[in-house]
Length: 355
Image (cartoon, rainbow, N blue to C red; front, side, top):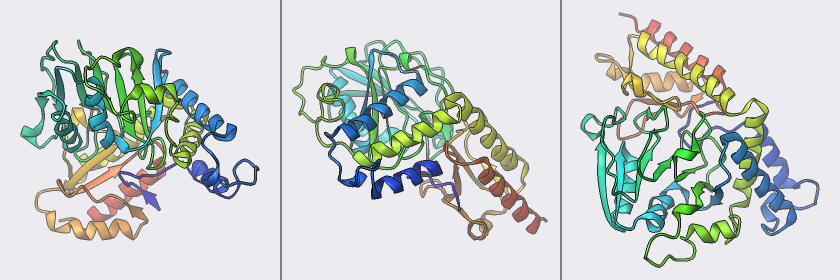
C-alpha cells in the first residue's frame, strides 16, 4: 500500500516492527510494552531518550522543556490560553484547526483574530499584517492539513509566539528560540495517535492570575518529567523509535531535502496535467499536505480517479469533506517511491481521458 493518509498516518517500517516485537516482549524482560510500569527504570529510559532525541533533532535550547502528554492538540487549544491568556491573545486564522483554537481561547479572555485567509477559503497564508504589542501571545498554525498551506519560515513576533505544529514538526528546521511554546499531536511525523508533544520556554509560565487545575498546569508536568499522571507509554515508545529512525537517515536537514523532492515531483505533475489543478496559492503550498481537485470540465471523473488509485494500492488521498477533491499527505515516513506511483497513476488516467 502507498499510504497518503492525513493522520494517523504512515510510520517508518522499522518503528512499527520494533513496536510489534516490544508488545510481545519488551527488551527481553519477559513483559509486554503494554503492561510495564511507567515508573519502571525500563520505561524511564525510553521517555528520557525520546526527549533527548527530540531536543537534538530540533536543536531545542536548554531553557525549553519537552513534554509528552495525552489529550491531543485539541486539548492544547484550551491548555494554552488557560496558562498564558491574562488580558488578550491574538490568533492568525488559517483554517479549521486555527478556528477551533480561537473558539477555545475565547472562553478565557479577549481573543483577537489579527489576520485571516478565510476570504479565499484559506488557500493562502496571511502576510503583511501588524502584530499588536499588547498581546499576551500570538498563536499560529504552521501547516494547514485541510487546505494544503504552510508557513515556510519562522515569523518574527514582538510578543510570545505559540504554534500548533501538529502536521509539520520535524519536516524542516525550526528556530525554536523564536517561539514561547510549540505543540502538536504526534500522529503525523512523530508517532501514533495518543501522545501530544509540548515544547515550552519555562519563563512564560506562572504569569496568569487564575487558579489552574493540576492537570492543566504545564509546571506540574515539567516537575514530573511528563509523568504527573500515567503517560501514553506505548505511543512514547513509538515516538522514540521514529526519532531514532529520523536521526539514522540524517536528521531534519536530510528529511527536509526528501520532503522537498517529494512535493516538487507531485506539484509538477499537478501543474502539468490537464485533468488536475492545485488549490493553494503556489508560494504557500504545503510540503506535507498536497491538495488538488479535478480541473474544470473534468469534475465528474473524480469518483473514477479514486477507484483508479485504489486499484494501484494508493490509499488515503480523498480530500477533506469541507473542500473535496484530493489530498496526498507526504509526511516524513512516506517514501518517494509512493509519490512516483501516484504521479504515474495521474499520467495514466490523463492518457485514458485525453480529449
